[in-house]
Image (tube, rainbow, N blue to C red; front, top):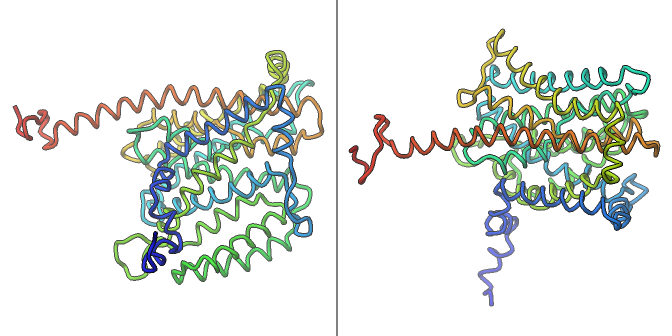
Length: 431
């Protein structure tokens, strides 16, 4: 039975997320990746059984106040709402890298940004090449341009045990820039109405949030409502609401005001929210995003005869790899931009393959381009699913091979602690 003196500690704000064993387990990226994969597999299997109507009923169930334009399906709440938590955490992590990490060097930060641009242009060109015939349809050119950051990072976490941390940072930066550019494409080419008034209003809570965090405020009763209002206004504007998560994350300061080396506010928030993101938000999003009905072998083959589906598959698998690896190599070869010293070009190629995972934004663009209830809408979903699956398989082969290389290097360095090239045994003495 807790004593009176125990209560402040037990009910302290954030204590469970900061200190509990469950939160610590969920903070591990491997745990989050496994939960995401489980959620996706359950959805895919369920959506292709005789009970698929039950899955669709849950995914399409509408909740929320219509007066605030928030009467959304559970699937939309997951993609626009829960995923904003993930993007907030990503924004915090990226800002730390830009301010105090490897990306503070512009020569290194330029590479993933250029890779994102190349990784969008090449898939679009591949799609267009497949759809120039009379049977094709060019309106879906942007479908294979987007990388699903949540899936890509989760798969990398499961694959990687010894890969350099710089590879994850490269992928995070690339995928965030990729998603922001994809959302811009949606706004310019696939959105009929962007409400600028709502966007202008969103600046107010975002500015207030920024002022508070710059003063190092940790008051959740003030920060959380402001974040929710900013998210709701961005959502109402017609712009993808996850942008609000990134902007809020970038607003949080990285360095301590007193100049000490302890954790800053960005690191504190990241530590607090990562279990929520990895243990709940991302797996639930995966469950609602991955439920694509294939229609058996006949449905699969019928879909893959469509130039639209083939353009998506080859755009994600070939276009992403060539675009990302090629643009990165060209920039490093002909400018002063530099690849991280810990990375090799084989790592970059494997990461480029992994960036071919396209779920959320790809499916969203497909719905905007072909969401008229036609068979082509189903073909788009199959193309995204098949292309993403092939990208995962190819990336896993390459990155697991690289992981074995780095594991062997780590083992040699562990045995040879003094660095003289001779394994240290028997209490650290060379024999």
